[in-house]
Amino acid sequence: MGIHFSPSSKTITIKGLKDAETIDYFDGMTLEDLGLQGVAPYGKVSSEVSNTLPDNKTISMTCSPSEGLSNGDKVTVTIDSDSNNEDVAYVPKSKSKTFTVKGLEEYVIKLEQIDKDIMDSIVKQAQDAAMSYAAQNSDYGTVELTPIGTYLLTAKEEIDGGYYNKVIVVFKAKSTIAGKQIENYSYISFTDAKMVDGKAVVDLGEYHSPYESSLFSTEGGEGYDIVIGDSTYWAKGFKSIEELFNQKVETDVEAHNVEASEGLYKR
Image (cartoon, rainbow, N blue to C red; front, side):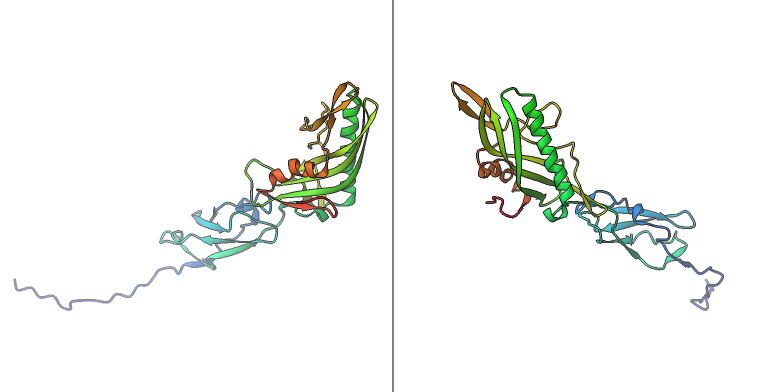
């Protein structure tokens, strides 16, 4: 054709482009932005979060770990690899940032965390429950409860719809039924005791005990027949501490660890 191309290539120098600005992609982000919730040691954050850059572009990030958190644990937030693309006019100073978990409520995990004044309140609630039951049942006289120890059950792992801990205060009980004194063992239990501001907190209005009363939230029905003269009565409580343990503690050991105060029966 009589057409010649020369040269075969040409080099062009790029100029006039604006250098990308280096910024902190995590600017303004706080622990609360991670959606921290729950109670230690089962605190959670969102597995995916986002932050907005100055040009209003949203940057996606992932959090790890996002479950099973306690105060003091570290959560690392990392920019997703596909977030820093050609549409972003900035370069991140860092691709990740680590947050320290704090501010979570905590479940009681050791008996030693329950102060004497809290335990005294628990004991009094048990005594009030027993006295209320006796006052509403003509077969009963007074009920005397002497605390002898405490069990603490704590969940081995997070439980959906169940309880995370249970405080079971055990009593030596003396009752008067139809004029005859009966001795056995009783209890009162509370679930989900927490640590708030370094102090154990127990909801005294939500508990279980063998004593039935319309004034209290109770399990009821726990006891055994006892014959006095020609009549059979229902004695509240358990004949032995071993029986109480078998029915109120050991039934939960598959999912819970058990701590017993000094001297209290434990298999």
